[in-house]
View 1 (cartoon, rainbow, N blue to C red):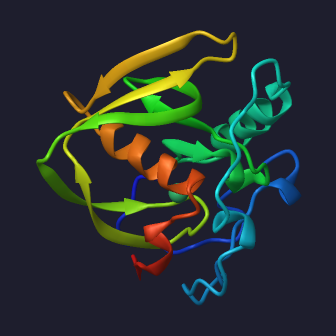
View 2 (spheres, rainbow, N blue to C red):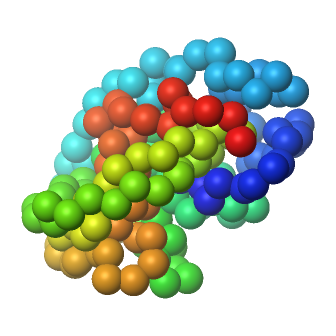
Length: 177
Ligand SMILES: [Zn+2]
């Protein structure tokens, strides 16, 4: 996920990674129009099995996020891996979540504009649960449960990225900003 920059044009080279082939960006540079959603962004990602080596995937995801100016979250399929791994920015730190599952959520919804690193220059108002409780596994196999949504936009970020893992990206149908 990205914070939506206001009144900003897409520029060639907005997103750079050490291996550019790994970052999926499908926007028509200069025309502000998404031409296609890559199949991997529409597919449901597979669960990471215990002991499965996903360190190289997480490294690539970090590199991709670090290479952006406004990236606040990324899902593995955005960089070409069909696995249930996300990274989100929480209180200034990047949190890696393997097999994240929303186990509880507020009835209360909040609408706000979202952007997506895979669809630069696109923004869309999207309703999200005000808070969500998420269970996930760390790289070392530790299972955590945490509530997001008491402060900042972490609840929105985690919902956006888990959507990606299920092949959904609502921002892809958004308007140019
Ligand atoms: Zn996204």
